[in-house]
Length: 329
Image (cartoon, rainbow, N blue to C red):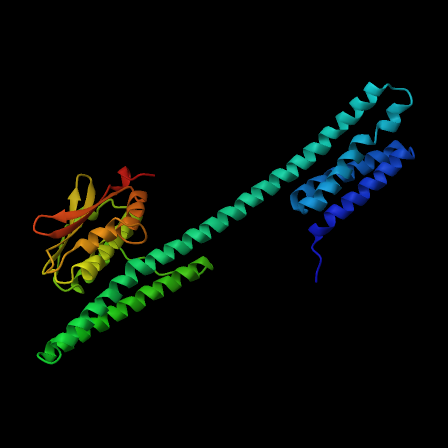
């Protein structure tokens, strides 16, 4: 096993400190003691920066003592105790300064490592949210279409074939989402990645959703930040996924992109389903990666998210994003 140079700093400092202390006790020439001090000061900084705490503390104590005590023999012969203590305290200042400089660099390096760990954890959470937001939508579509095909296969084979085509399209979309996740992992390793989908892909998303209707104002997208654009697409994906899960019998689902003052409003409204939509309300009130989990993402992009029942038993999800100049920095 190769020994790192940093592992030698503490033993070298301890040895040099002991030699300097012995030299001071034997009254070696002051030029030699001063030269030893010039060596000890950078060693103190290196030990404070790189050495383990236990061995570094012992070596640092010896180094500080050696630097502080080297002038004592010079003052001891003709000086008082006060002068001896003053000389030692004077030379202890640069020794402590060297320790402080090394400790500061050590602290900054620790902060940098923690920032890298936090960034990696945030990226992992981001990938988990992406998997939910994009893949869950397509998987839900596959489940719903497969159930529909099972019920109509005997009476109307043509409908079953169309359902299978939609299953194929949803499966391909899920694979594309997985590919984006892999690209994101490659980006973490310094490789290029595929762009995250935004509102430009909204027509394709709504087209794959049975009963979906899209109303889009291109002027509403002017001035929208990239973060708001991708977040709005995630809101649409999540809302449509929840419609499939909790209101699969909804006859109409309207997705609208409109201007809202200087910003943009995205709304997803579904009509009432034959069964109760209480499950969606319960899901909304929970944390996690559903609509409630998107609220923080929307607010981080400078927007607001609202969701609630509409007259007649339907459900509405609405996200409003400001223009780029008004976005929260």
